[in-house]
Image (cartoon, rainbow, N blue to C red; front, side):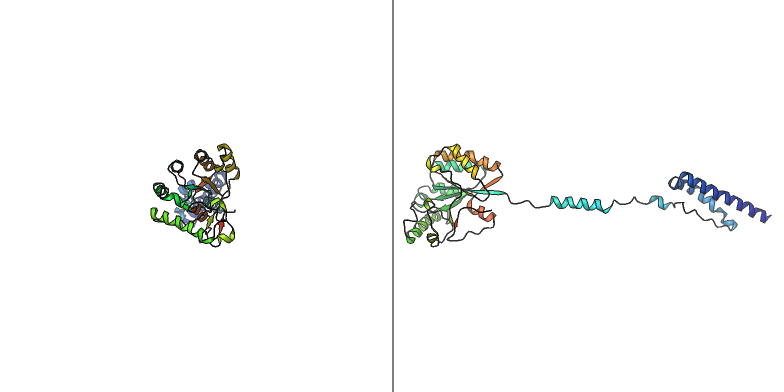
Amino acid sequence: MKDKQKINDNIIIMIIIITYLIINSTLGTANFTVLHNNIESNFFCFKKSNYIMYKSPHIIKKEDSKKEPKKKPELENKEKKSKVVEVGIPKTKKKAIALTFDDGPNNNYTLQILDILKENEVTATFFVLGNKVNKYANVIKRIHIEGHEIGNHSYNHPSFRKINNNNINKQIEMTNTNIYNIIGESPSLVRPPYGQITKKIASSITYPLILWSIDPKDWNSTPVLKMQNNIIDNLKDGRIIILHDSYKNTVILVKNIIPQIKALGYDIVAVSELFSRNDVKLETGNIYREIKK
């Protein structure tokens, strides 16, 4: 009787195995997992009859179905990182030019120009004459308070080529003294009158000498439009524009030209800032017209 029961059990087991394999091949592994989980508990009940059942290698365990999806290829991660790096690439320095004014100050055009500079949020360098400083002390104070640079343009505008070195230095020091007495600071830059300077004369002066690279000739009654075109045509990063705060046409020019220069992507700054932005140290006795790129 026991042998007959054993035979019957074997037949049942074989039927179950064959059924398992047929269903597995028909449904596929993923769909068969649920069916397997339901049958498995009954499948092993035959252990009591000392029969050991072996799972088909095609059957997936319960925990296998819960595996996380495969991670995206490393290539995608690398591409994402490269975009971050590109965003972090530092920008180059913005283009800049220096705007300068000679022969002031005065209570008329200098004040109008200061109003325009303030309205447009730009700074400039004013090369002033020592014999006007005390008379227009209020203007000197305003230039200083509003963040502009004050330079030395001699005391009474003589050509440095026509006076000796002692008189040149007197012209400079008298002007510096007058400016110091008003704002408590002395200029560190000198612009020789008429731009007349030689290397020999420059070597005897203990200040950097600042000339220019764009001259629209406002001192020669040049029409405003012609001056505007002159500046725009010669505009270049690191250049210095010379104007004079002594003429009505200069005021009109400044009002028109500042927005145009800014629209072309330039900052308008004082001379010292122009050179410091480009890591150029201004040295005494040297002549500077622009920063060459």
